Picture (tube, rainbow, N blue to C red):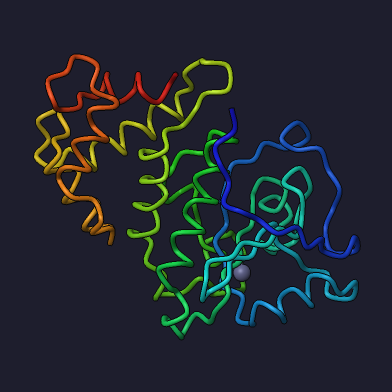
Length: 247
Ligand SMILES: [Zn+2]
């Protein structure tokens, strides 16, 4: 079963702005590259659909509402990183806004993008780490500065992790991959605040609140834990957490 992608509108880029390929067979997909457009959503769409532009990205996330448009199929190579090797091995996610205008980096934008990135990471077994989820400015040889100093990387990676922990990565053939186990351990450790090896409802609630979700009361947290709690002791061990993910 595929990890659920956010609702996405297909707005194909002009064929002159990307390279048809057959990934991940032709090239492994190792990175997610985070961009900020320095344009409006509408202007970015115009650029990607203009055959003279010679630029594209797989996805664009809108600032105000977190809407997601897809311009290039993931199997194909979008021209976004300014580095052919990285283009061949990455998925490019553009975010509507300007690097020096942090008000464009809304809650809706972070959440939609994190859900998208979680789905991409799960599909290609990309670990949710800062050396695999990178900014355009971090691509070797990059002349661009996006996403810039106002992009909240800690928050973004927490949200991607949260997407993995809440919905639970579903393994395609039921086999465990190392990247999945590592991502799960990282996620588990973030929620196990006191490091005792168990996630309690109070810990779950407090981490969700830190992530900006104040709707998760302790009762709700307990209900989420109970669904994954194999031995019925009311707290979640890593084994129980892992078992609940790998069904
Ligand atoms: Zn960029």
